[in-house]
Image (cartoon, rainbow, N blue to C red; front, top):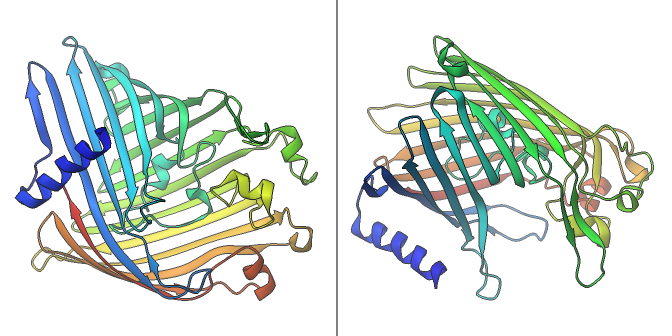
Length: 376
């Protein structure tokens, strides 16, 4: 019933055509905002099943805050994602965010729950396209890279109010174990992990940033022994980035390095078949450029992404292989700030041997994406 009510609210907002209908309650120091987007898009090209791809989805979020005192504010954020390209039997809502916290004036904020991982603070600088996030090995929902559960996060803005533009965050992931009810095996096991990030706006539209994460693999020792050359003590990742955002021009570049990262989002893939694998060492490079023509509402963009893996678990491929490598040429047209039309042409630069690409379902074809987004 709750699921239906949430979507009923969204549909009513869309049908009413109300712009900026985010604030739905604001009284006596309590504020509730509704946000989200409806994203319909289609890829023309080949995926691993040689079929055309529909990747439409809906995101719905609720943000709230309450004034406890002049120095203390409580807040929460809850977000659902619904893949509208699924059949009725597969249709389900995915919990994207759910956390609660408090903010104490210049001291900073502390929250706990399902949240963005600490390395995403910098990685988000390149995930700015309206249709989909830039795809790379570092987008998996594992460790402290993209999103995860049991995250305790402390954030500080302007360094306790003393240095404008200097922000930092510290994150701790509390141990979590999930047992498969059928096999009685541990299928999700993250031990205590931590990470930190910082960014500094030096002026002139330029911001520098970096992040570091020391995590423990989601695999228990037995699963990790699936390949004994994987290090049990070197699970970590870091990224550095720079961005420029001024005068309608946006540029961003990020370099990342990870040890023992899983390509597959589904841990069971590694247990049940060999199409998933661990990459001992991964290097990511992402570059984004955009320019907004205000007069006509047009924003062309160019994106370059490369993820290179080394020391894969498959014994036949222990040398370096490109996991992802492409250039994307696209444009967004803003009918207004709510409705956006998008076209994107992905030029795949993967040149691995076909045996490797086929074994691990690495797409090597070019793709054209057409989409329409409604944001509120």
